[in-house]
Length: 230
Figure 1 (cartoon, rainbow, N blue to C red):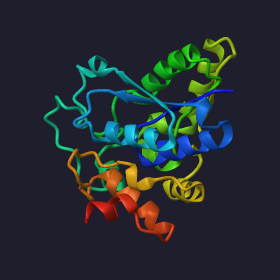
Figure 2 (cartoon, one colour):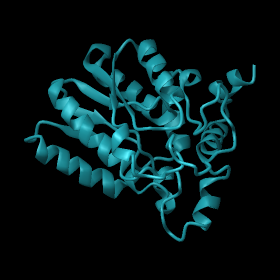
Figure 3 (spheres, rainbow, N blue to C red):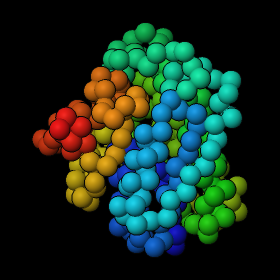
């Protein structure tokens, strides 16, 4: 069987990529990255570098126009500032709504596009790296188990039962994702998580904070952050 992995160049999707390679082998895995009008291209560069490291096919799809009407703070055309605080702090002010870095139904869009690509590439499974920390408090509702189950069913039915969805970390924390990645020898030094697009991670946006905590809970230094300081 061939597998298609949604690859953002970050910790979670890169760990998913390593899992898929472990199960299906390099020649049977395709990495798919999606441009959606984000403020920077740093994460796409990371996904390219990760794919080159693993020597897997890498595809890139541009869906920028779909978000022309969104004012999400992650988008290049938005004037909103990216919050420089933890997700927990952001959720205290959101009154139950997703955080400002939630891109409207992004993962639903990505998975639908991935299904079309996967079927065209004769893949039988899509890997998607959502984990429970992102879904907590409704910060990113399209990372929840309920969402993954619904999308998995839709993909399976809509593909004529040819395609399934694997979400191996949906009930795991980011620290558990990193733990699995350390077992797999994931090249985390190549990955990028920061919402800012500089040459070094900002260290204070929500995703930087989550990433730092995940590595700390595993008792190891984040190699990407360590390299960025050198």
